[in-house]
Length: 441
Image (cartoon, rainbow, N blue to C red):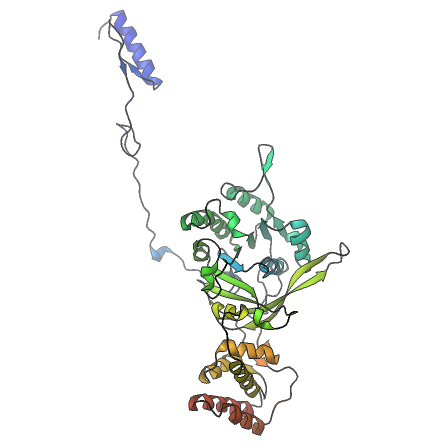
């Protein structure tokens, strides 16, 4: 190696510039100093001379996955770790329903079907529409909630300043806050569209926005309820397709529930409303309950009133059928309803009957189940559970009505169903006979 002083100095400068990752200056022993630019990156962003990171996909063998059952807060309706949606027209009482469900969770109360919430706990509510002070807290009180177990998502504090909660950036902070509070059994987002920072009508943006919320619910093992409206002018369509915004809202939800006022219930003072399942990927996707919205006067402060849900009898049928009745989409003749009224008069004349038996008889007689439901309401027929619990069977019966004799039942059956087909009249005759033989049990 040369010991020339100029060569030694040039080597020192070259090493120093390499160490600082700056442009390389080639300094010959004499003459001008040429500039050599840095090397350009190759395709994929990796500089020339550097190895491109290797991407791998991991496969999990099914044999290594331990199966587990769905963990329910409310069997068939609210599943832990899953996203649920409650939809309906404005004024249907969707938020009040969610508040009623929240109250049941906080106190370990009874669900509308008579079963008990298995694990009472905390509820976290993020509301972008209703004020907590004058609307939501009074409704919680009216529903009998344990207020010490209810938390509202408030402002975010960052660098000494406060701002509104943003689901696009604050999910991690929300997770930490919920864990500090001791966890949660139920999360409520009202409306769920507020969790979407992009275009709520674009499938990809909705999925991208809702996935962090769904992941949070799964991690916390909490049921997640999002509330939304029906789109305008969609009556008669599949209820899941009626959700406002992208179809992704209904696709991502494991359970979709709908609420509606029964416009066909009759009477200006009627407040008959219907709540039912429109979709379920984890259980049955039909059936529901009647409910009404009632005003309750709270003890404190004086004069304050709040809306609460009063749950009623169960209803059968698909959500599309139930909403068709509620919104008066399907027009039926009075003769069909009169026929159904006579059908129930005969079938229940000697005492209560299981709903399944009534459905079988209605099918054999060619009477639509929704028509039977309307006749049930007209007659004031009551539904009572034979056995409590999620699997208990329901019976229909007349309130405080003495049973008819076998002769009366047989004569009425012949008079009403004389013009039906042999199969239909035979089915009614069999049920009338069964009622007489079993003494109305």
